[in-house]
Length: 310
Image (cartoon, rainbow, N blue to C red; front, top):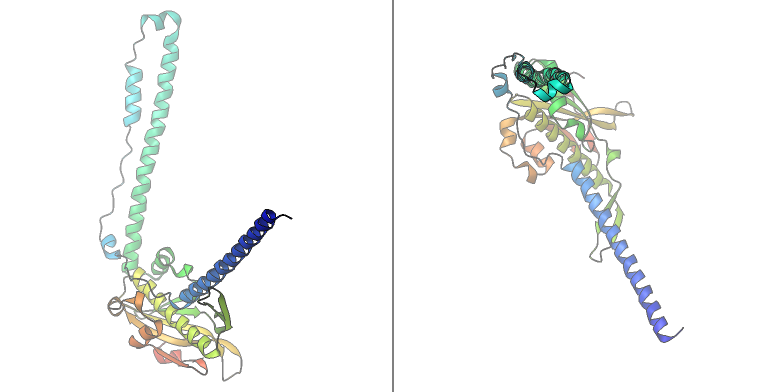
């Protein structure tokens, strides 16, 4: 191999090594970014602004009247048929009947156009009136309407990193959400950080840190569920009872037990700048009740103390 060939081979190997290093760095950065995204999804679900639906304006709106079917297109087509006067050429060579047949067909098509236009207007009217009727039921706190409103307008179904299920209770004017939160086993077991060298560092997540992440996830989910209820429903406050799998110290078995009770008013949440807050600090500020320690994590609380029967 001559000098030029050797130099070209060295350059090729150097390029391959550079590409390999860059691919490794890109993979490390992607792994670290993915880990940060997961942590944010677990502990930062509450970091969204509170924007409420204005049900009252819709509920107090007047229903639209059902419009009569119009016949503008059909009338115009019928007029063209009635006023048709064949010329000498059409009368002589037989084009008159063809033209009359075409104009008659156009009347049928025009009638269908009027039907379609009326159906489109009716669909708008019926949809708006149904919206007004639903809003009135929600404002009146009809249970089925409130549940339907949450299903249609909330993001509760799009929070797989926060909740596993939500049960709604309406009790003596109280609105209560019973939430199946994530469990400790749903928390990451390892951390992924990006070193100055650009390489990823993967380490086991300490037990205490994992318990803290679980606490933050439960607190964040409680706030987010609270916000979803207050955003969708015309209520002043909501209660959230969070459940998670923990050791039942009475039976020695892992069970889904209540660990956090939060009662929050819309006014109190609106006063907070949630996108910049830590979930546990918000929960403590709102006066929530939970039993958590760095050594043991969550302990069960008694829902009967808050008037909730599971």
